[in-house]
Length: 316
Ligand SMILES: Cc1cc2nc3c(=O)[nH]c(=O)nc-3n(C[C@H](O)[C@H](O)[C@H](O)COP(=O)(O)O)c2cc1C
Image 1 (cartoon, rainbow, N blue to C red):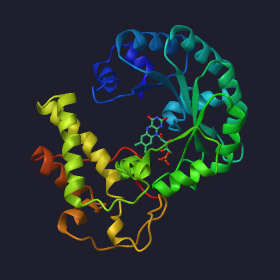
Image 2 (cartoon, helix red, strand yellow; image 1 turned 45 degrees about the vertical axis):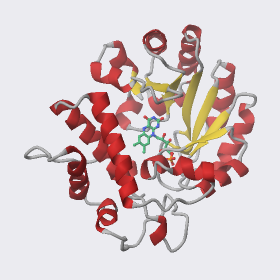
Image 3 (cartoon, rainbow, N blue to C red; image 1 turned 120 degrees about the vertical axis):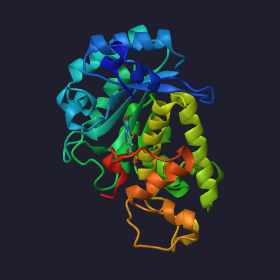
């Protein structure tokens, strides 16, 4: 996800976010903005400058700072402007435009079912619906009944559903109980990136701690290739690694669970892991995440501190 105005102002760090890695066989860029002219110009620049398969509009971000600027979730209630954004963008794009939305802004007032058919008529190729309102943030479970209702109104445009998928069973439930064309997985993929293998193979994988460390090592190597292995590149890689570890520690190994699968909203009682590495990976203490980062990237500089940015890493 990149901020449209930052891309237009040629911010190097923003353009670094939309750089495709050769291993990415499908690659989309999500942009966040509030105005038809800047969003259209950004779409045109992205199509001209980078190798991208689709562009998505961020219409789900709940953060106050974004919302007050009329961006993210705020677009859901500004249909006139939203229409101009979609039509402006599709007029300059030769790749599909997709949109990510929520159920609505307020808890008791779903509006996605009114918006989804409009988006289809404005030339949008696919919509992803996160089954919660802005007000709700991550409290309570996503409303898959409502996701199903909206997906039926989207026809023939495909609609993806999003919310709370953490295991192949959650995925199967979503597919069997809704008309969605596919699902999107966010926290489940951060907490257990092997979830896609589990879904494909329809099984729970009792992955070992050294295997998980190998995944972290691969991530670190990709980070250093992407941002460079100089002091700044190491610092950026470490920051992204620590943000990720703030989610990863929520994984409870299949082998220690009394009942599989782990559910996204269930906070476990304290439990014993099977070895020191697994114990360190299960720690919710920031100091332990820093220690894991040191195993992979060397010692942190004097006075280093870290506070995770994303509140979705904790239980609600
Ligand atoms: C760390 C983090 C970053 C996110 N960033 C974005 C984003 O840039 N754009 C977006 O549309 N949604 C973003 N989301 C929201 C997710 O796409 C998703 O809608 C939400 O987490 C619910 O899905 P889940 O239950 O699978 O986590 C983010 C979520 C997390 C946890």
